[in-house]
Image 1: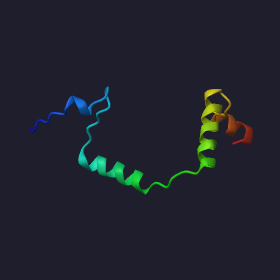
Image 2: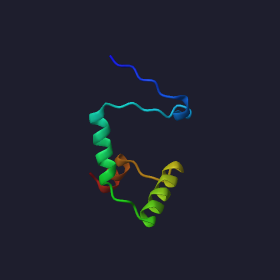
Image 3: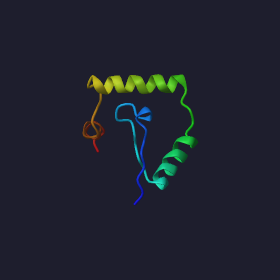
Length: 69
């Protein structure tokens, strides 16, 4: 087994993550292929998160009940 030493200057708090190379490459490829979101999309996401935080949402059971499913 190999050992590595990470200099303290490179670590701020607990922000070090170690992943197997295959997982890192999959994650990197996923994010590299992602399209940037528009300002409108970002605002919609932020508004949706606020609504969820405030309890302004329906559960899937509530939606199914309302639709008679």
